[in-house]
Structure formats: C-alpha cells, structure tokens
Image (cartoon, rainbow, N blue to C red; front, side, top):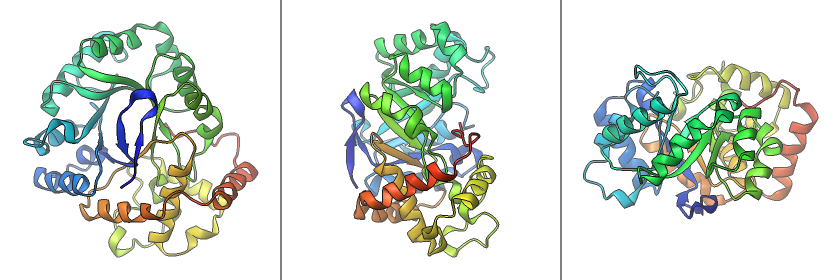
Length: 309
C-alpha cells in the first residue's frame, strides 16, 4: 500500500481509505463490520472515514476498533446536518453536540479530522460553524478540520483559508473539481481526500453483475444514474473490458490527479480491500493515459456536469 502526506497536516495516509457509509445505510451486521475493518487494516489502509449521519456507522466502527492501538489508524468523521440531534442543522451547537456524540460512538477522546458535511457557502460565510470546529481543534477533540463537498460551496471553503483539508468528488465521470478547487487547494497546502473514486461503477449500471463485484453496480446513493449518463457520452474504450481492469483504471486515474492524497472506497466485502490494494501496485497512470482521459472530459463534459456532492 502506498502512503502519502495529507497536505500540510503531516498525517501519513494510505492511498486508499475505508468509507463507512455503507455500514449504516446497508445495515451491515457487527460481525461483518469487524471482518471488513480487519481486512482493510490488514491490507494496509489506515484512513477510516465516516459521518454522524451514516446511521450507526460510527458505533459499529467504534466497536470494531476496540483493542486496537489508537495510533494504528486515522479516524475522520463529518458533522453539521441530519444528525438526529434535536438541534438546528448548521448551528454551532449542533456541531459541538455532534462531535461529542461521535467521540462516544467511536470510543475515543479525539478524531484525527472533523469535517463540515456539504455545508453551503452561505452558511460558511457566517463564520460561527468554522469557529466551532476551530474550538474543537483547540480543545484537542480533533487534530484537524476540513470541508466535505463540491462546486462553488467547496470553492469558498478552499478560498477562505481556514480548513486543513478538502474532501470532494473525483472520478472518471466527475472532474469539475480538477479545475475549480484542486489547484487552489494545492497552492494552499490543503490535504485532498477523493470521494466516489469508482463513480459507483456506473458504467455497468443495467448490466448483469459480475460474480466478484455483485454489489458494485447498485445506485445506492442516487448518483449512479447521473454518472451512467455521463459515461455513455464519455465512451471510454477501456471500460468495455474486464471489470477488474476497468476498476483499476478508475482508481489509478483518481490517485493520479495532482494533489490527491487518499481516495475513499466503500464496500461490504472484506476481500475487496486486498483486491483494490493489489490493483494499486501498478502505480499512477502514465501521463499519456491520464491526459487522454482529461482531454475526453474537456471535449464532451456539459455545463451541468457539476460535482456530485
């Protein structure tokens, strides 16, 4: 497994990270979560990314990590909305209460990264939400603070200069951020976390699932249909081959984007982590292959092909 430095934070992160949304959305049983996290950590992953709104994902992760040394993994979570707490969304009070609950659920006294979860630029401009994160950082309840989102909201979050990291959509069918936010983030030394690096494997939506990827073509979060529409227009030839080869190209593309430090992948299958780690042995895409993908995007991307936040 390759490791990179997360911007100016100094954190050494695995190039692939564990995405915890499916643990909650798919109601994955605790014994399966234990096996999933064990397989991920055994494959060399050290980034575990979840959110307060992923139902019981944080609780399951906290239980699965009991007994493991706290310095053997990095905990990233998100806050700000849909938390189930009886407090207004996008309020400093909710941010603070959500973090306290996340710490209890994750069975830890601090997280390594606390992120605002798809917060609007208008809410960010008030300043009090960012101040709540900064207070948490000053109190040692989080080591770093970040923003998770896309589009103009993400651009404001980057330009304001108060966040340590940006988590944003980056994949074959979602390249808006490569021009809109990443150049600024790189200049400011922000860590960059890529979400949805496999674009829901949406180039296969409507096709029979392959045996070892039977859950990979489901549109679980509502973005797959939009990605499938884009893939039809992009018509990348390499996506017509074996699924494993296409997945490798997709992951390698995202991790070849300048400034990307880690890519968050979700799965419910323990064996997938070693498979994905093995795919990364080939390293970044050759420059010619990378530029060919970028050029095709520039040729066909519509004005409405914005980041899928």
